[in-house]
Length: 272
Length: 272
DNA sequence: CGTAGATTTGACGATGGTCAAAAGCTGTGG
DNA sequence: CCACAGCTTTTGACCATCGTCAAATCTACG
Image: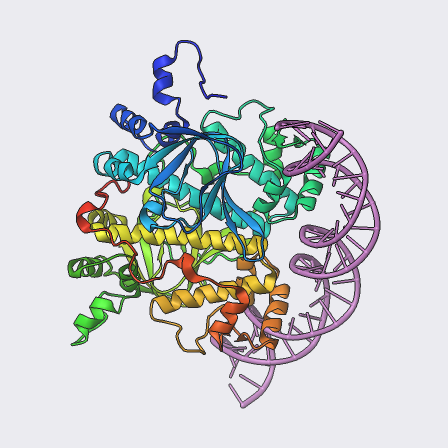
């Protein structure tokens, strides 16, 4: 599939914004026309990758970051015992491993989950953009920090949420992130996830994931089948999972939404 | 309190390297003499905070970051059901919430676990350093990215490691981080952690944490008591936990100390 | 068709949670 | 110096969640 939203007249607009990566960055920081065209030029080398391919291996020092234009991918780590742990999902618009441009080392592997269309973003180009386009650099950093916020939320989920609520929470998060780049609106949007993948995400066994999905299905909260999950009533699932999207910082492109905070009040004393 | 810590002739040496934050940054990227003195000046307002105080509350927009000079603190999030999840430990040299200088919103709360000595680092100062001291800015970003690597490792641990190995892994990580700032070498260094704190870190109940600690103690892997854990033989514990410190990127200065001239120009664009 | 991966199912056991209470330390006020 | 309050650790009994093992279906795809 391609991601052209308005198929009618929107050719110019399409060329400007059809790239979900650019849409995502534009939603995180203000980008002007020159920023957008600089990005378009930097992202010129597009390629197709089939499902189940590793894009990056932990420990490598790649020389380009990748941007997912279409399809799903994940960041993962392997544990000595042979298990796998998925530490992030990458949906259209997400980038992998901007980190390595600073750390000189990939701290996780990246693999495609579905056939993907990806663009390479050489670190050299990132440096140039950094030097000439502060808006872009700022947007990239915001993206990395939001990734960290997502990671924290997963840690909370895996540690302190019940299995059903945790799985529901992950599904809600993915839908919210997809909507943020213009996908996943339809009530029957199919998340292309398998049960083993969810298991490695939630830190559960795939048998237990099956049981959880069966329960959610029985309650009408989701529909699922071979390699897909869909959500008939997002609000209801979000309510069940107590999902609050604020950690995704999707609230438009407002650079400055902050309700100005006061000086640190060292009298907090919150426990529990 | 005030900024003059080292009063007399130990002033130079004291001010150069006694600050664990500066030591930590210097271990992550090359800092020259001017960088160090710029940092010293930025970190002048030091204060003492007792244990169990909140420094930052989730959702706030503070106007300064904090640096832990002495003591232990943690980042945590609360879940709707009343549980708490600790998502990071802050040891001397660590900073809190540089994130918020970009995101305009604290994505987690921060609380002290022991009495702490902290320095404030106003976002305004960060902006100035960013504009004039690329080495510092680069070191700050490396620190944030290493935080993310730690978060990933915790996610792996909580999801795919057995309780005993996970707890051992957390202990090993803390010791490694302490050694990196010149603490925790002695075999009887006491980590000031309570069982409920470890429980909220590992996603376990405190009763089960007790059982795990009792087992580790029985095997001579740790010693523990009221508010402390110590490790008689670090190598042995690391072997048990299959701990590999490479994700902490402690290996001296960065492997690729990017010549100052060709650094991505990270000038400006912090906040606003 | 046949193979490989996904899902489904059931039986059984292990890990870890909950509840409740006792026992130790530490700091505080009388 | 003692009593007391509050936290932390310790302990045991019991139970729920979740993992493991094994096998049967089902679907896509060559």
